[in-house]
Length: 291
Image (cartoon, rainbow, N blue to C red; front, side, top):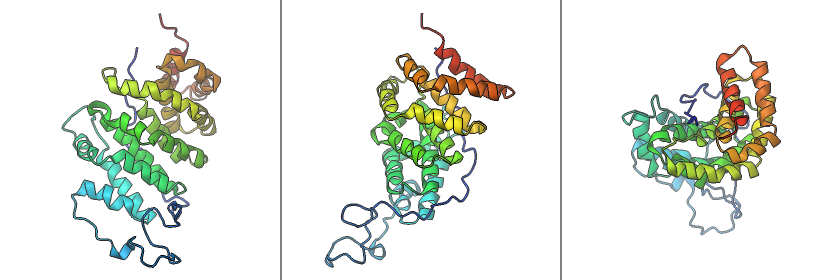
């Protein structure tokens, strides 16, 4: 059985200026924003919630500062800038090399709960497309860099990361860039070493949840919608292949049109040998019975 390897280790295209960047953060039931800023019409003049001018930023090293201070700011531009830096810090050239700077950065980040903080950011800014794009890039790179040293898949599952990425897929159906980066994050989530027993258990248990959340249907829909976007199709084929390694879910893949969608990719892009190979590997796995 072939063990899938991460196929997307670098950010392909830097997101351009996107619409809806000024979307406000989600507010809690008290009417105050999730960033703790006092509303002008707050009747409780004695509230202990600090205004932005009263907050004193702690003195922190670069990586903790990015997560604890910069990622919590109230401007989409500031949050995107923080996510870009985080993404580049874990953009590994060789995630199997323990001396790769990205691997070292990931190990330093782990004590902060980086995936949870990125997912919380996605939940605070559900309509800010640029934040959702760069959050998906950050998660994809974290999952890639943690391929060898571990810690990524369980953190992604436990923090609600898969649900957050699927929500972004549903919200920004017409953004090829968002769809591509979201699929890349999901592909890397469902990739693990054969020897990584803990991650294999996490993924085996979570695949059913992914199907319940209509994950396969979403992947198939975006594959059909952006049938000429090669980067997106690579991520789509890789994700579906990884899911096909769990043979008990083959019926669900067939039911939701995954085989038909990938066969269409194979025919439409017959001149692209690399993409055709990705499609063929998925189809071969689906039609090869275990002996």
